[in-house]
Length: 195
Image (cartoon, rainbow, N blue to C red; front, side):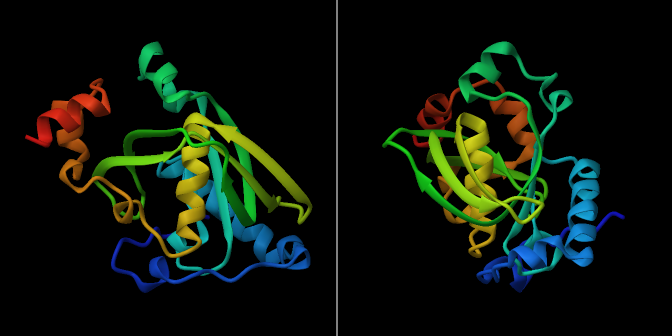
């Protein structure tokens, strides 16, 4: 079942979400929510979807970066973003810590800020302690684009949107991103828009 993705301005996107117990995660209701969020994510399409984005203030997100989402990108672009396929999985009650001081800046969008994108600096490497879709403890070590997805989705669970972290002069429609900036480095974008 496809769920409605709420857009910026809905209060559920701006409040901290409630944690779920392992028993909650294993419940029929949450298992159905996970299945519906997976279908909604794939239909959108997107690489991550947090429960607040479908109107529920609980600490749950689904993540999947499918190979077909990367086919249009050049090998150089994929390498720069350190992006590769990420199998479908669930994070519940994530506790994220950055690893090291490296930050990378790339354009980022959001299914709840539909049609827009901006440059966002994120930690290159992270570690996430969470529960998985079976309610079992899991530790995820991630870098590159996968680390960005985890940070973006974890932000949703605290009431934070990427627009709170973006370099505001870079905020633009996805259409203009494709028209003028596709394939250009964040340094090039900063140099031209900062003048």
